[in-house]
Image (cartoon, rainbow, N blue to C red; front, top):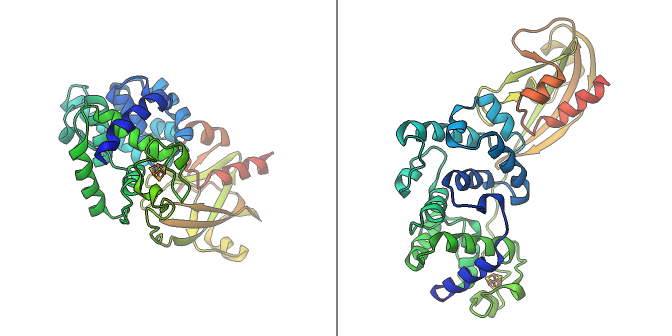
Length: 340
Ligand code: SF4
C-alpha cells in the first residue's frame, strides 16, 4: 500500500471534482459538508450546502438559528439529529473556543455529532494533522489493493486498517485522505463494479491482478429491517390540518400527522377519532429507514371540532414554516390534492 501513496496523491490532484466545499480549507465549510455527506449522495448535497451557507455563513450564525428554522433548512436530508448536533457544536465553539474552530484532533472529536471519521477528515484537510479518515470507500480500496478477504463492516477491522494507513500517511494527509476516498467513490466502485481500466493503481492492485476485484470486499449479509405498520389520520378542520410533534424514537421532536400503530377499518377509525364529519380512505406509503421499514396507510377526515391535543396549520404554513420528514411528505401532497 505504501507505494500507492504518491500515485493516489497525483491522481487526486489531477482528477478531484470541483465541489463547493473544496474552494478552501475553512473547517466550518469542511465540517458542514462532511456532516451533510453522511448517508447522502454528493449530487444531492450540493444544493443543500449552498443554501445552508447562504443562510448561515458563519459558526456564530449557526449557533444563533432557531431549531425550527434549522430543521426547515435541513428538510429532505433526513437524520435530523445531525442538524441538532451541528447547532449544539456551534454553541459550544462560541462559548468554549470564542467562535474559532478547534485545531486538535481530540478537541474536534469532542464536539457533538463528530465521530472519528469526521474528526480525522477535518483534522487532516484543514489543519494538515496526520490523522486518518476511514470510511467505506477507503476500506474497499484498501482491501482490494491488497486482495484482503476482510470483513469491512467490522469496527475492529476498521480500526486496524486505520492504524495501518496512519503508518503510511504522507505530510499531505488531507489530500491523501480525500484522494483515496474519491478513488473509492468514482473508480473503485462497490457491488462488484470497479472501473479497473481507469484506475491509477491497477498495476499494483492485487485483487485486480488476481482477478478477484469483484469478490473483494466480501459481502456481509445485511441486517433484516424491522417492519412496522401505521395508520395516519389526515384531519382537516376548516382550512387547517392537525399535526403533532413526535415524542420519541425515530424522528424525535419532528412534526407528524397524528397516527396509530396498526391498520384500522372505517369503523375502528370512527372509534379512535371523535367528531368525524366525513371520512375517506387516503393513500398508502412505504418509507425505509436504515433499520426500519414503515408501511403507512391513511384516512382523510373532516372533523367538526378542533382537537386541542394537536397543533393546526394551513397547508401554506406547513410548507413554509415546518420541517416535515420525508416519510410524511406524500401525505402532504395528497391533502393538497384533496383541497383543490
Ligand atoms: S484496480 Fe480495480 S479493484 Fe484495484 S483499486 Fe483500482 S478500481 Fe479498485
